[in-house]
Length: 132
Image 1 (cartoon, rainbow, N blue to C red):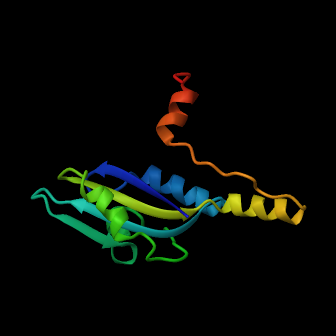
Image 2: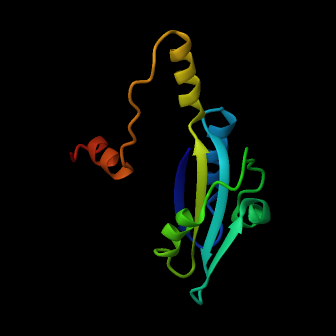
């Protein structure tokens, strides 16, 4: 399981971003396990909304999750400390389902996954831009 935190101005995620997320789910590459929304109100108050209570209001209508209640207070605290007034965040717990499928096939063939390393997105972006 991994947690992805997306931040944006306002309360609704761009429909194209939601559609891209729905696409990787529909292809079977990703399984959404939990989604929590957080909004920093203009007065500074933080409002946290569970997926089943506010998916439509944040532009996630029609998106389905498999589990629920996996994003925890520590995950939300990361957002709470940095989210400016008038901005929102979506915390998404997910599984790269394709990795599980490939790993199972390798095990079934007598092999094993020897190492799985996540590279921070900033480092990967720098390498892809030739800035390493």
